[in-house]
Structure formats: structure tokens, C-alpha cells
Length: 231
Image (cartoon, rainbow, N blue to C red; front, side):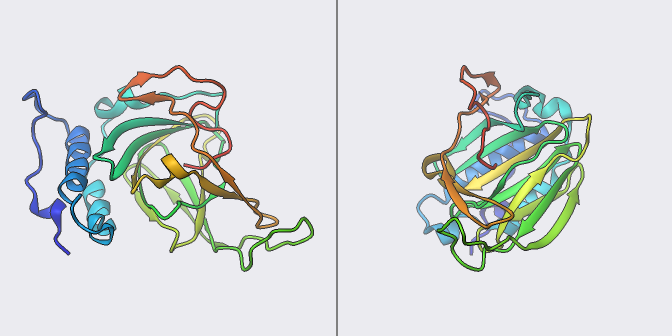
């Protein structure tokens, strides 16, 4: 596979000729990677290891990304669009309310790479249910594969091949902030499945409204940012 990220020169300026900070250089590089690869088959478009390595290289600086980090204590988390990568990926910042968590969810066939920008997050991964639960009396409890406490600058990766997961902000007082790349951005158009941990029962849910886009707060209702769907 051609490693487009590693072989491409890292951008240092934006379209207006302004010098990019580390965060925006990362975002532009990842978006450009997808754009360059748009003529390839999808199996060649996203090399998760290359994306993970590039995210690990960036050291979080709050001033770089603060304008995108809109939080809301009335929600478990907010979804803030940073970049729509040539239709091949979405790059978002999620802001996690203290003590709150996502439901267990899948990723609709997408790669998901997550980097912690502030605070810490607990990721719990689950095996897929042993059987499809379709009736009320049926139960197939989810089995935990592993739990990992992720701190600032840690990077995690998951796809449907790895199983399901949920994300929690374990801190009772401090917000956490994470950067996410989804490739392709299937959940944005198709939704995803959320799972009951005790029964294994799945429910299809739609993607909820963004809380902000490109740093600008959006007007949206009670489903803004997050309601029942996972990140």
C-alpha cells in the first residue's frame, strides 16, 4: 500500500498563506491524505496505522483547537465538526461532560481513530453478541474484551472487526476533549447500532445534529451533539 501520509510533505500554510499550528497541520494533512487517495479502492484509502502514527506525533496544545471545543453540561458529549475530508472522512472534536458516557455502539464499517486532547477517557471494548437478539425473552449479554484508561495524547483505534465499544469521561468534575477521524463517514449518513449491555439487543439510531461546525455554534434542538447515539 502506498503510504500517502508518510510520503507527502507536511503542510505548513493554509490556502491564505498563513502558517499552520500543529493541530491544523494535522487536520489538513489527514484531509489531504483522503483527497489524494480518492481514486483508490477503499481498502487502500485508509491505512489505520499511518493515521495512528501521525496522530501520535501531534502533541496537544489547547490554543490550537480550543475554538472547536464547544461543551454542554446538559449532554453526555457534543460533536463538533472540524473538517469534512473530501467526502472520505469526517474529523471531529468531541467534548465529554464529567462523569458521562456513550452507549455501546458499532462503527458502521468505518475506521475510527481517537486522540485524547484534554483530560482522560475510559474505553471499554466488547465482543459482538454471540447471537442476534430479536425477541424480548432472548438475552446475549455483551462480554468485555478490555478496558483502557486513555490520557492526554494517547491514541486509540477501533473498527467493527475489533468489536464494539463505549467511551466514558471518568472525571467527576473536569471535561475531556478528544479528536476523532472516521473513514469513511458512514454513520453520518447511515446511522449506527447501539447495544444494551445486559441483553445484547441492538437498536439502529440516526446521526444526531452537530453542536458546532468549523468553530461556529449551530442552532439545533435537544438532539444537538448527542442523544442516544455513540461517537
